[in-house]
Image 1: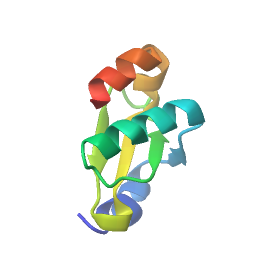
Image 2: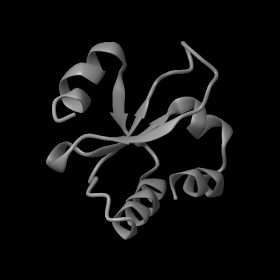
Image 3: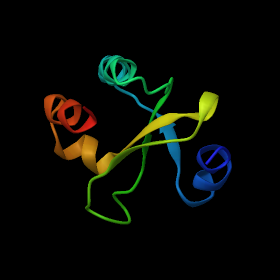
Image 4: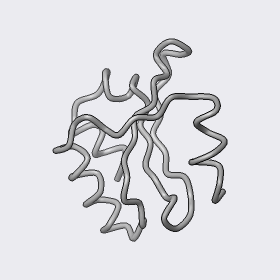
Length: 86
C-alpha cells in the first residue's frame, strides 16, 4: 500500500495532477474533514480503456492520494463529484 500509488500504479496508467484547481481545493477540504491525510488529487486517463467511472483514495502517509478517472471528471458535474467524494 505504501509503494503501490507511486511505483506500481504508474506502470499501468498515466496519472496527472488534477487540472481543475478549484475542484481540487474542494476535494481536499472534504478529505481534511474526513481525516484523510491526502495532499494530492490526481486524474488518470481511463477513457481509452473503459467508459466506467471511478474515484478512490490510495496510499499511506505522505503517499496518500485521491484519484479520479477522467471518465468521472468528463461525465459528472463538480457537485456530483463532490457528492461521491464525500
